[in-house]
Length: 239
Image 1 (cartoon, rainbow, N blue to C red):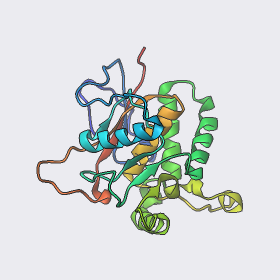
Image 2: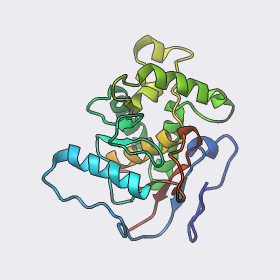
Image 3: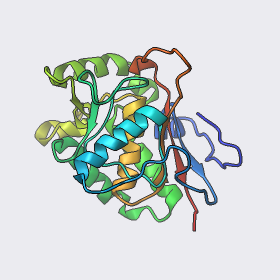
């Protein structure tokens, strides 16, 4: 976890919060805060959704943060720390228009979150749903990396290297298999989980949320996604 001065945190409970906010954590921060600031993304308009998504992707590549005020757009892509998102390679793509599994998960979250009465409850329920579709945590995710590598290999586009985020989720499976006693699970890692949490918080209008990752040091080479450090900060109680 990353601890922010002046922030307040939900208590860690065995088998609960580690599953809610895996590794990176979604930290619940009280009070109000300014948004934007240095490096903030500005929508100049006139380019359509695709243009904004491309600028968001570039902004995250350069600044390693998408702020509270910046709702993620369909078409956003992330290739990892120090990796150019517009270059063909190994981008993870967030796009409900092309990704039926991602859309199904968003619809399922919308239904599940109807009973969450306040922002803290919404954050916890959403984090549990994200953890569940991404392969869970703790002993339930003991083989997560191997499963992730297999799923990514099976679903990554051969020419562009693109991987739709929904292809890493349990919601990619439908029908009888999904309803079975032991349905197939997802296998998404920390960067995918934090991206998914931020996207759903934005799309469902639930919470003000960031997407962040560790800033590279000078001369550092692009990092393997298996060793990436990403997190969310969630703002609650702001009025």
